[in-house]
Length: 254
Image (cartoon, rainbow, N blue to C red; front, side, top):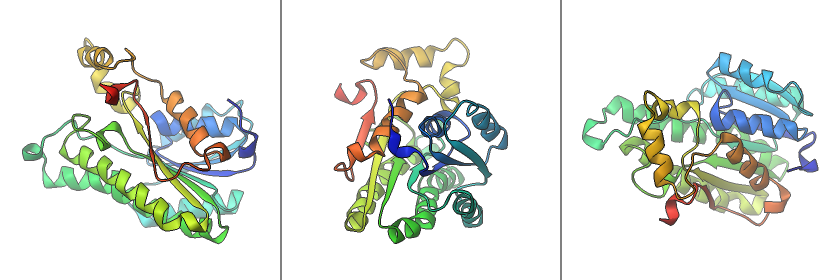
């Protein structure tokens, strides 16, 4: 898959230290883009940078959290100083809640999951959106989940956060589409990332069960989600607005 249009474009990726975010950062850099990876995990960002050795584009790391406006502002300023205005925002940072049901969800856990998954996306978007509006163009791809469409993909807090992300994405596109902004969400199913390492621990029974329950019969690699991101952010997808693209091996078709 090759997209000449990404050469020289500035891409801002949250959660770029591992999993889907790391795969997205590598995929866009491979297309010649200038990629800014934002994450709290410095070692993970260094690993992402190491994967860029043969990339046609450029990658810089910005250490920080999506929950602190000062960290976000610093990263955005670095992106602007090094590469110019941000063209594409990939809001991928997020955490799980270990499938915790409501009565077992503490207020601290609820706040942590909603703050990172939802409020963090809102804070990053609002820091970058003004420059997109100024240049009258910009693409935003938010990471949702099949847990944002059905129950069972997470616990109370995670499922609530992913449902909210889908609603936020639709409203974001609706409010700014006439000003050149395009926002969509991706809803992955079973993706083999470090965040899901617990499913593969021990005898891997949970991972095997998930694969069996997935019509495609397997987990996906994060690179497959990155490939979908390349298409969804491209001009080829210019008429796709405020929607949710599932990549779940047929899970929701059951």
